[in-house]
Image (cartoon, rainbow, N blue to C red; front, side):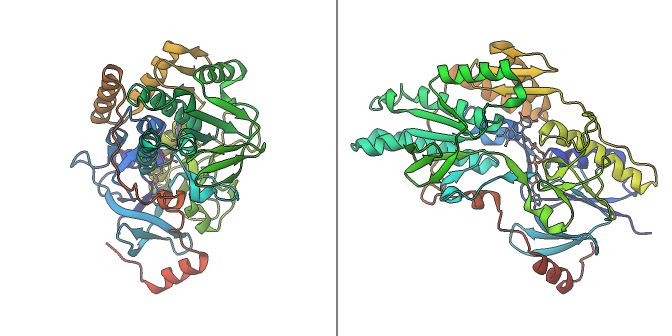
Amino acid sequence: MARPKILVVGAGFAGVGAVRRLERNLGRDEADIALVTPFSYQLYLPLLPQVASGILTPQSIAVSLRRSRRYRTRIIPGGAVGVDTRSKVCVVRTITDEMVNEPYDYIVLAPGSITRTFDIPGLVENARGMKTLAEAAYVRDHVIAQLDLADASHDPVERESRLQFVVVGGGYAGTETAACLQRLTSAALCRYPRLDPKLIKWHLIDIAPKLMPELGEKLGDSAQRILRDRGIEISLGVSIAKAGPEEVTFTDGRVVPCRTLIWTAGVVASPLIGTLGAETVRGRLAVTPEMTLPGADGVFALGDAAAVPDLTKGEEGAVCPPTAQHAMRQGVRAADNVIASIRHRPLTPYKHKDLGLVVDLGGRDAVSKPMGIELRGMPAQAVARGYHWSALRTNVAKTRVLTNWLLNAVAGDDFVRTGFQSRKPATLRDFEYTDAYLSPDELRDQIADAMPQHH
Ligand SMILES: Cc1cc2nc3c(=O)[nH]c(=O)nc-3n(C[C@H](O)[C@H](O)[C@H](O)COP(=O)(O)OP(=O)(O)OC[C@H]3O[C@@H](n4cnc5c(N)ncnc54)[C@H](O)[C@@H]3O)c2cc1C
């Protein structure tokens, strides 16, 4: 009998967690494993704000998928753009834009999430997210370019707009991004003698009444105090009404001259999920606690893309939050369940109690809540960095990150602008490939046109 084909989609926390477990626990003769991924690395997203601020080099948080000859998974360079669960075919758009039909017996869907946007005039054209390595590198270059251009300009209006920065989203991604980049622009003052320190201004805004509500009242207040003391203007209950290339209008009527709008107001499941035509919970695929899709044979989904029931909450309808902590553990459990399916054994539900939250605000500033214990300052920073460091998967990544941290502590920030893409401002769509997916009709045609290719 032919070996069953397992197709894993997405090489993030969930996908890589699943692939590694499958490779370890399945015999070579038991199944073929393939991984669809547009990039050849697993991105350690929680440290992305530190790439945007230049504390870490981009490579240090991009963990290679090709570390050793032991790994036997066939890596397909491309993105899944449609899944037909009836014919059990996944359509892949390769990195050279060719369409390939990949048949599967088991599919593990872990394509993660994309930046959630709203119908706000000018938003998608003028905002950048903080979700991909390219975005982080782009934002870093862009911010340094603003300092360079403001420094050179004689026009006070231009200087003002170049030196104001707006971050939307008071979750950990937005808060850490604002905190790390604000440190960078403050540190810049000793290198840019023509810049007036009073003109540099960071705004952090959120429509919610609190920053990072999951931190709780006291710790959340501490985080706000730290940021306000550093000069970040925090506006709560406020969002964006309109965005333009040189100014942003807040919903409270304020018009802020600004050429840097960073949008981190939440995430939404990958558009791939929509192509299945299955039930969703706020955009995430509705799955069982075993991470299977009801009514579809051999489909597993997890991570940010799926609404996996949170059995530790004891509430009807509770789902796991979209965090790396859950995604990587779900990867392991989903792999075990795929193996159990192949071996005709019972599946096990996913269950994990949240370990807490760490928030690195740059330098010695941090707040952390490991296992419910509230920490601030250096102890919080030690826990935050220690946690991320130990969670990096390979020794190479660990060494790169540690060396970068030490270098930054000793030598300080650098203001090198690489200039890639500087003439063509890329948009959210370019960075996150949101227009790559197939419509239901296109998916049907693609499945009918091309006979499944067997390998
Ligand atoms: C700035 C930032 C900071 C964060 N900080 C924390 C933190 O401190 N702690 C925490 O627990 N969580 C944090 N998170 C959240 C965490 O990163 C996510 O919850 C986690 O990455 C989800 O894992 P995943 O495997 O579902 O998705 P991802 O890790 O995003 O992986 C998805 C993968 O799928 C690939 N992909 C996308 N579409 C396709 C497709 N169509 N076909 C094939 N592949 C595809 C992507 O390229 C990516 O490699 C942070 C997120 C951000 C953005």
